[in-house]
Figure (tube, rainbow, N blue to C red):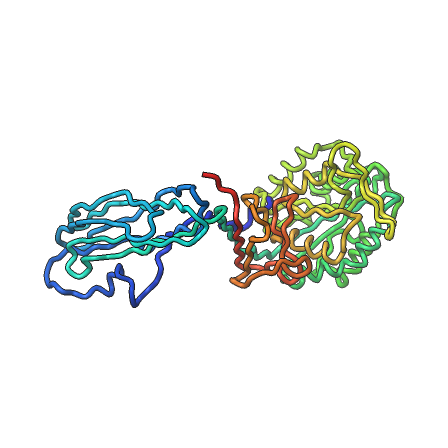
Length: 443
């Protein structure tokens, strides 16, 4: 599931051509025409009835916006003159002409702001329409340091979710696995709160022991419909010990679990045709897989269900490798030391999963994010452009302003150029989200 691929409705809003309702004063509203001549007559129609360029960089001419003039009457319409009246930063291209009944043509208006201030004008249209001989179309725009970009999305509404956990069972992981099991109710309660039909299973990173090698641990497939105590069943399955191979091979284990012969031998019960499939690895080591490369694995997972939006790979692992002098990470309080990773950040990025550093995580928060990601929902939105002023990012959910707050609100993550939602402001199923921010559009 590629980040940003869910229910995307993004648009650059350097201008807005949407007609503005004004039942009382709109001179272009044909329904309000006052008939002054009976019988056949010309009838002018102008679309749009108002023009708003929105915010636009100063001294940076806009693309021209088209205005359509039509004769919806049954006699020739003589558009005698067109004129822009008001601030001189707007330019009109086009002139009057005679239109036969049913005919139309276009003129254009452009905007070239000279200062960081609002500008306004009117496009005045003079014609022989007997009851709308003089029409005025409001034109407005505002000069700004940068253009404003707007992105919109609607949070998906998942129903069926299958999760495969790949847990490192080497000697250094016992404390982390205990924490995972202790906090697992957070993950499952998120699923229950979303009303999901879910199931999950556990494999380990051990590809040396024949009892592992992609085999499901514990009871196998765990679900609320088949397991009396799913939290207890997961805790038992996740109690994989710390005596496993120190050659951690998460990719190989997941690939073995989800392909034949194990898929046909019982593992196939985990994968249902109508749901999302989420893979989640928890480890303190880099992946040592050798049966399948990270590139081939990402491609295989994207194609696994025929739609890359239905699959994801998430990871709780060491910090992303920065190249030379990688030191990994250390959490002395919880006795965790982890290697830096190249493979896991790559897989997460390629498949739209969630990544967190194992040395620095709040299990409750991380498991909440993982539950949403596993369900195919968004907790972060990667922006199309880099904001030129982070302080001017505006986010709304269903029209309500979201505060900039790391506990309950949103924050900006520069590393991924993403807006990240937190706590009670994580968008719920079918929530409509709007993100507006300034960016350097150039000219």
